[in-house]
Length: 117
Image 1 (spheres, helix red, strand yellow):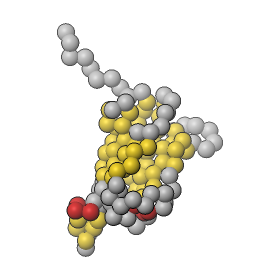
Image 2 (tube, helix red, strand yellow):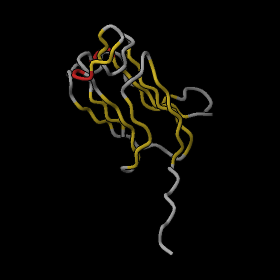
Image 3 (cartoon, one colour):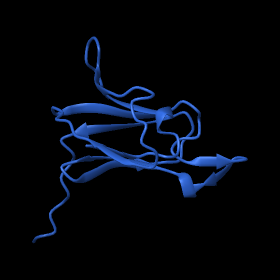
């Protein structure tokens, strides 16, 4: 799942998920700049991905990520946040980036080690 709480300018934000090492078009899911227009709103997109290597990239066309910047200082009052999960397990989260941020991950996620003797 990809969840994004948008900042004051959601039309600047887009994201995609790409499968790594596929031949041809490897974009699995893509949103476009202008897709979302609900300011300061949380949107969740669910998808089913096969086992494999992936890359999640989030973009901001203005270059202030999901935070508002005032003279290069973060103004978190109007900021947003994003996170990517698989079956409730956190893969990546963030908000503070400029034009884009990319994270690679594998599915299935590694299991947590057992604490039972």
